[in-house]
Length: 141
Image 1 (cartoon, rainbow, N blue to C red):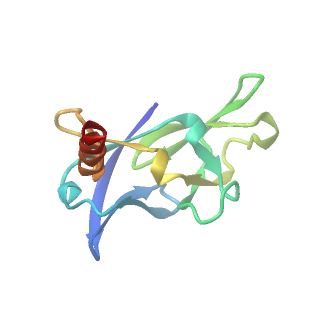
Image 2: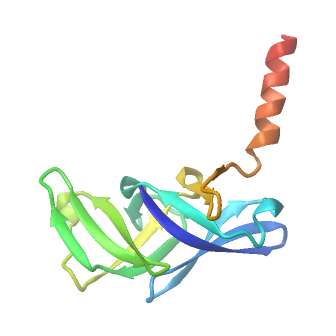
């Protein structure tokens, strides 16, 4: 799992995580989560959840420079820097870039995890009320 320090910005009631590769910036939508405003967060994203742009339309994307390429056989590990942190992406071997080249990467905001930077606690913005409602419905039925 990659752990990336994340700054947030709230605009029009929506929270965005700010990612910077040194080549480009991206706003990752985190939903209507007022409790995230002003908090220092850690973004958790698995290497296989970072895809080459174009794999799914309308996902946030970001251009990043390839620092290291490690072919492993069934896939290739590609390392880039996001928010001054080395990040591993797991790509298909036929999509393997060269070190020094640039890639357009995309993230599915629904598949990332958020952690409080101070405590390490996993945050689930907006999930608590939805879960409590489902539990209450199950108890009644």
